[in-house]
Every structure is written in structure tokens, then in C-alpha cells.
Image (spheres, rainbow over the protein chains, first blue to last red):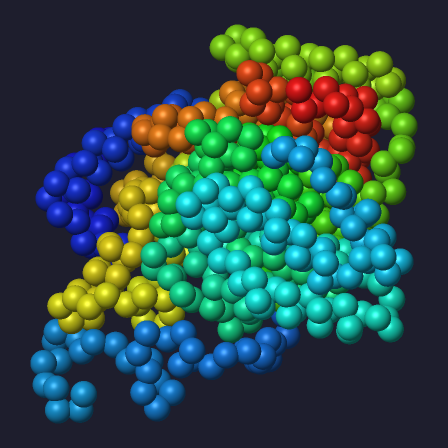
Length: 102
Length: 485
């Protein structure tokens, strides 16, 4: 199950990470080495074994359906990279070229 | 006092503040002076990534005034360092990452609120491997932390700054976080005590998430008692963390003199392989002999799936990390780097904001979750995780009270000595199992090899931290000064 350059480029796209060709090539080698150590798991008999999704002794608990549990000491403008009228600003999507409303 | 020498304990500090012979301001001032003396800054040991001295002094004077007419808290006047992934209101929370440079949280972690309510002074933020991914504190945007006992050596990681802050005698207690051993391994490397509580014992509200099915806040202490007092303060149910368990929190210090006569201590053979450093083996044997001399019964046991823990961990943790770290995209907080359009901004921010190890793990996690590989890697790892957890259930239900193992296979390695990622992952080989099973575990010093500390580890069943502390107190008492030479 060797990782290819195409695999690395695909998962980098999914993860929103841009890789130079040299970095991608390095990662192919590194991921193959790491995943090579994982192959031992394929030899373990797990027939009928339930997968663990967590180990919490109390399970997950629901909280009441209400908002505002924690008052914030700072407003968004103290830490958001770009803000206007209380809304987070992001660059325009490439499919929406007009800058009329920017 | 040299680095590693036990300084004033948390209990003694509190007593002096309570009887009025010392003020909280004075304890903070002393800790700041100690930080200067040991060169804790970036040009020295590089322990702290933020330490606002004037704020700390103002805060400490205010705390003394506020507490004058109230019941003294359990950590009154005790400075406690915080790992840089624990949200606090007055210092940045950067997780050791360029991506969060300058970010100050709009809320604080429940553990910090509890520390302050107990009279403790949150004392600066400590260096760490970026987003807690690493075992040496070398993967920090702020550069590596140096081990106070041997500055050419790594302090361990990812909570290396917190371990070093305690080892250097700056604070008696520090908080870290554990996902695969990030408190116990640096505790072992730095010659201090490190505790990972049961999953669900301590609220993670305000702990920046790495791998949510594994993460837990942990405590460092100069001594077992310091760690016990710190854990008692931060433990307990919190409705803001859905995985937090509503269970009584015992007074862990109360077991300090409890007899371990008849306690059954398991020695799992998989943690003492043929290849184990003979000097580590000898230190562990000496520790077990001390425990036996106090009436404990040593029993050989087996946890047969132990060797699979590293492969399982390095599938599950990166998978969860790839999801948790998706939020760092330059939109809501942290640094934004411009690129071509929205997608370009995402990619520029994440690619240049994250360091090499974080990028590697995000990609590994994305791969094992992707179509075609999910069953072979992620689902398989979850199944084997069940087998690892079952190993602990079986051994504890067979009458074993606690397990004893080495914390790490070796003492602290030299900075820069390990470049192969998987070789670095293997330094967690004796610690990740407790995270995968959710059971509590702790490391304490059991001696030194060529001047470098060795840690011994106790592992207990879920919510049986008291049992683990009783064994640790007994061993600490029996070893005395031998634990540090």
C-alpha cells in the first residue's frame, strides 16, 4: 500500500496545504517509512473486535440546548485577522471575480 | 541550589503565605528571580514563551489583598506555570506555533480558573512542541527548550517547558497536557514527577485540541505531594467538557503515609524487553525491591498487545489532529497569510504557519482517513486500540492493583540527536498505552544514569489515582536522595 506522489498531492489538497515538488517528494518517502511500521496491524486478528471510538468512562454527555455558556473577555476584533461590521472577512472566491461589493 | 534540587514545596509555600510570614507577591518575585538566575529566557534554557513580569507582580499583589478575608485556597500563593496550549486571559496562547503568534484567548481554561480560585498564580506560558506534536520540545516555533539538568539534552516533550520550569526550581507545580506521554516522558527526562489523570478526570475546556479521544491535562510537581495537590485542585466535573466525568475527587495527599502492605504491583514483561538498557532495568529492579521491602507483592504479568501501541497511536492521533487543526485556516484567529483567493489564503496560512512535524501529521492523518484507506488503517487501529484497553482491564481484574514500568527506554537524548520521525515516536513506547486505554499513570524519579534522570511509571485502573499516588509516595519515601543520584 505504498504512498505515491499523486496520493500526497491529493491529501495535501484535501488538507489545504500547498507543497513544493521537493517537499512533496520528501513526504512520499517519510509517509511510506512511517506507514511501513503500521503494516504490523494488518496481521492482527480483529475479527469481531469492536473499534474504540474513545475511552471516556462516563461516555459523552449532552449539555442543555442553550447558548452563552462562557462570556468572552475579548471581542472578535481583538483576535480575528480581518473583520468588518462584526463579520469575518475572507478573500473573494475565485468563482466570484467581481469586486463590486468588496 | 542547583537545577533539579527540590525547592520549597507547594505545601510549604502555602503555609508561609497563610501564616502571613510571606506574601503572594514575594513568592512570585522569588520565582521570577529564580527564572533569571537559571537563565530561563530564550537565550538560555528557553523555558517560557511568555512571562509578563509586571502583570504577574500586579496580579500577585491583588491576589493577596483579595484573599485576606476569605478561606485560604489549597494553593494559596503558589506560582504555577502553564503549557502554552492552555488558554489564559493575560498571556498569549500560541501552542508553540507561528500560526498563533500573539493570539490571546477570549476565555480561560477551566483548569486555570480552578487554579486561581485555589489562590495559585498562573505563572507564564511554557514552551512546547508545536500543537503538542513531539517528544523533545524541538518542534517549537520558539526554538528548543534545554534540559535544566544537562543543557545539551532535550527536556522531553511535548510539555518540555513545563517539566523544565519545575526541574529548574522556578515553580513547584506546572500544568502540561498528555496525548501520548507528553507529561510523563518529559517528567522522566527532567527528574520531576508527572501525572496523567484518567481520561475524563480533568476538564479540557480551554485546552487546545490535538487528538480529542486521547488529550488530557496533566500535572508536574517537584515531589509526589506537589503533583497530588495540583491534581486535586484542577480535577472534577465540568459541564463545559462533555467528556468530563462527575466522580468524587479524593484528597490525593492524604494517602502520603498509607501502607502498601499487600498491594499487588504488576511487572508487565513487555515493558522490560531484552533490548532495554541494562542500567534502566537495574534502576527499575531496585525500585521494585524497595516496594517489595515495604510489603508490596510483585507479580509478573503480560499486556500482550503493547508492541502495537505506537502504530495504533500514530494512526489515531494524526487522524484526529487532521480534523482538529482544520480550524487553523487564517479566517477566525491567528495569523493570516495572503495567497491567491480564498483557497490560496488557506494554503499559504497553513503551509507557512505550521512547522514540519505538524504538516507531516496532518497529511498522515488525512491519508489514513481518506477513501480507500480508512478501513485498512483507521478502523483497524481503533479495533487494536480495543485490544490494548482490554489488556489493562484483564490484568487489573486479575487482582493487580497497579503496574510498574520504566517511563522511557532511555534517559534524555541530546538535542538534535534524533532526526527520523519514527525513531522519535518510539520514545513514547511505554507511555502511549495508558492514553489509548484512558487509564491514569504517573512518572517519578528513581535514580540517574551518568547524571541523567530515569523515571519509573505507575499505571492504575480508571479513576484509581489514589492507589497510584499511594505507591508513588511509598517509593519516593523509600528511595529518598537515591532518586536523584
